[in-house]
Amino acid sequence: MGMKLKILGDVELTKDLTLLLVIGGLYSLSAALSNTFVNIYLWKQTGEYSDIALYNLAIVVLQPLTFILAGRWAKKIDRVIVLRIGVIFLTLFYVAVLMVGTSASKYLLLLGSLLGVGYGFYWLAYNVLTFEITEPETRDFFNGFLGILSSLGGMIGPIAAGFIITRFTKFTGYTIVFGLSLALFALAVFLSFSLKPRPAKGQYCFKRIVEERKHNENWRLVTNAHFFQGLREGTFLFVISVFVYISTGSEMALGTYGLLNSGISFVAYYFASRLIKKSYRKKAILIGGILLYVAVLFIVWDVNYAKLLIYAGLIAVAYPLLLVPYISTTYDVIGTGWKAAEMRIEYIVVREIFLNIGRIVSILAFIASITLFSAERSLPILLLFLGAGHTIIYMYMKKVQLPAT
Image (cartoon, rainbow, N blue to C red):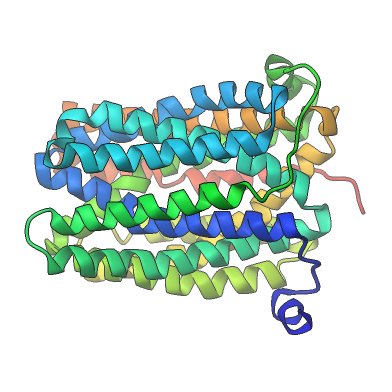
């Protein structure tokens, strides 16, 4: 254990902290195996940007609606049960994908809705458990190490999936990959039974925490920042993988893209979690945001695979720089907010609502642009506009004032 602690930092690994990291790691590996390739699976069936956008829109609409319900249930029953429900819905998504097979494009909204509901339950519970299980002094470590696990999953998943898919004819490889994801989520459900039960009590005051934005300047700033985070993520989460596939026509190339991105990200998350101290958080968010916008400039005109690989490398450095201090600051703002201990679930729900409103606006803007204009003409302008989202985050986060510790 001594050596382990030395590698990870001087942090005491409790059973629940370790389990939460392992479940997060399994989720990341499963998502890395399949999520990117679901979009390509659908693209190969329809070849329409609008269909991919509708599938992703269903996800981001159902996700915040589920968050509101999941928050109520987490307050009335147990957040570990809510986590389990989320993972079960995610397994159902893969069961559905396997069942409908090459007819998946006919069930875009159903599949997107299943995934959105799964994400809603899973992330509400996971974020609340993160808030409860970590302390202010362990949050940078936890967020950084979870980033390392996500990067490891991102290194193994896409290249393995790309290899499997290209080794089999037609859609057989996709079936194997989605089956593997199903198995990983089933394992996550099993492991969740080892988490200590965390029953909740008290009233569910969702509307009151929305109104808290009027009374708490830090909370208003953080929620506004999350809207702009979502503004970039909504479209960029799916359009980049389609760009890679269009540029190369190869799932293996997409796997290589994922490997490069996650390999660099793995190293960046390790250093970000160890080196970004509280006093450097705002500077790190600024640098990360600027780098993320610079990366966009490589993919808006004359997109090719080489430029996409440069983009992958840049965002792999930028995201850890931005997200590790950004997430930690967000939890600190919640932790110092009105009735934080009693209302932590409501704070998490409201944060996710703003994030997903940003994603919804992003995808609606994408659908509008490709419907009203040709994709070739409208997408570069749209990506330049939406790509500024993470840079704008700094404009809000720099004004956050936390009490000295």
